[in-house]
View 1 (cartoon, rainbow, N blue to C red):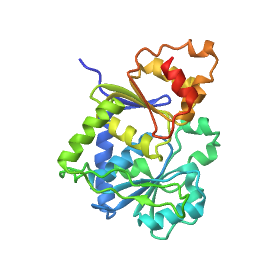
View 2: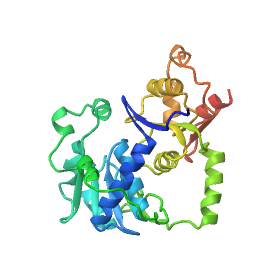
View 3: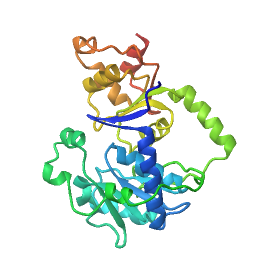
View 4: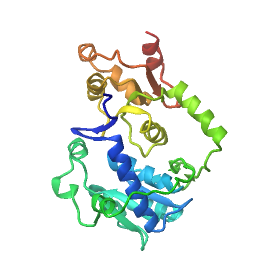
Length: 292
């Protein structure tokens, strides 16, 4: 019998079927709060199962998932929430102080900060849990969404704001022909094909890790989320889970290359088939190392 597809984060794992049942329940809950086609659900979340759940629930309704850079200041977060007219924000408990200037009337759903994220960022236990409407309880009290899904939209990613205020990129749903062409490109470039074993080491508030991670959910036999990039841990996860495809940025590649040779030789990376990097110019030392 074929093993069920799983999503892994730290020592936790969930089957894809179980996660998708939670996605459908969350979609029903979002709809009850008024989310429909074109509406926004904001995510103030580190890499976690909840990030995938909330994103996919929003897109099930034809809405936009809007990830927030949790390095921003409260006033920057408040600007984004007002600008995209978010109805709901799903937030990790330790990040709630960033919502201190959030608009009134916003529904806030709180996710306990998972232990692997708390450990990676040195988050005290007292701030990893908080009072508020609990995400798990919210999901549990709703039935699964049983209507046809709306045309899915990409996450609405905000720019860095180097030319003024950050701007949200609101993409319209693709036509069937556009969706098929994009799937072919993703298969060729990113290795996003059925049966992959994928690793997401970058924060999913960035556009590339976001698209890679969400697209990997229905295709992966194994999908591993890293709460925070660490070069040696990346190698260890590739070996442990026999990862076949990973998306990196050049900075991550440089940190991997700078590991001691003895450390790099310690891990079996023979399962890898695709290593993709962001579109930023690739440093010469990375290009040469890839050629070598």
